[in-house]
Length: 530
Image 1 (cartoon, rainbow, N blue to C red):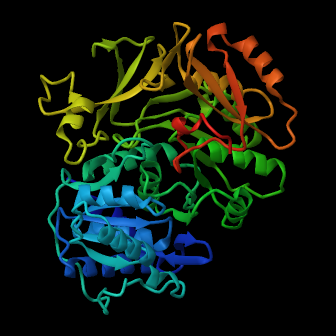
Image 2 (cartoon, rainbow, N blue to C red; image 1 turned 30 degrees about the vertical axis):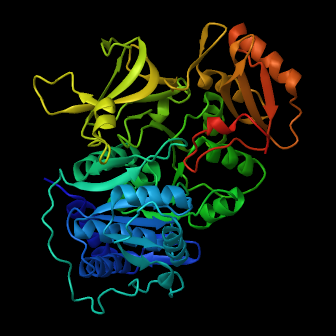
Image 3 (cartoon, rainbow, N blue to C red; image 1 turned 90 degrees about the vertical axis):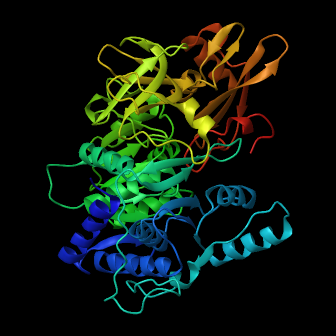
């Protein structure tokens, strides 16, 4: 039996002992916290949470950006045996209220302005939200000198005090991550200690570099409150890497200048970040010679962009990965295969099995196309307090005779699997539509559009149309000073796409509407340009 407390926190303690104040654990703008103070701060805050009544199994919501204080709070929650509920700092009040009402936290950790707004919102509304939680404001610690332990105003005054033993087991919940879907009510995905430990071990294994003994420096601009960033944060802590926390990637040159200054060796990215990185590198002389790996997940990277990345950064291993909040990570492509299989997300991660099923739930052989199913210790426990939706998504295992209680994950994603087991993403089952009687997978058209020089981003959706039934609407973003026009794009599509798959409407915009995790907000594709 292993717990996050046994593995991650023991590793933090180990690095605190071995490195002390000599090496940074987290870098946040101009602020740094070393391993010794990270270990001490998280223990102090854990004591504060316990004194506020937080016990094993309680939920603690942390509404915070990518910041030192956020990571300290995450570690502190784990120390108490409570269930961490990470929430993005920019979450709108209606959604925040819905999440808090759903998870019923014992404590809420957030910037003071968020807590004030939350209280005001509760007072104004009459929906019965009961704010019984204890509040901890992050703000008091943001302005403290570098390396000073955080206390949130309530922590113990002496480092001699230790947190109480909580007695968790690996089947206990470690976190509830609410899905970042753009429609419908938020659903909390329940991740047990065993889920996170299995997946972080697998990711650490395939990202490891056996050619050097140096510790990695990881640039993390993906919100750590989302599944992708959350997983990469724990993997980095487990591996002893220094994490450079970025609030966002809105200003690529500034973020990449910090990468060069801190000699970043691993970048955690989504497709839009990679596109901006390549454009910035082509216009600057930034030194990223220490960079050895780039990870890409959350959304599919068009094959043309994958190839551009490997050509622009030939010394860097590009790790194309696939996962969902419900399984954290499921597949990864060996970087050596990117040149020949840039459209693939690879094969199953260690200790995970992937297979395809048809519409009737029957398992398909290799070489087929169907819905991807994930089996393994990375599969979440289901949705918090949603038994019906859990039953629909987490189904009995086909190995039920041997493991009667096991559940596997129906991803709702359509893939093609070749004879060697390599997976190629086709599209979300609920995003595929018919145009003139033909099935349309937006991803296929987006890849064709993105393969044209001068196109940096593209997204496709279906719109009601009298003749086509559902017509193909494409939104395209061009490089600065690109000479591409609609006529050029249509000629490119005619050469590479079947007639039924060619866009009826093409719209040029400055950017594609996406979530902070890089996923296209398709309902926002049709309407006024931005």
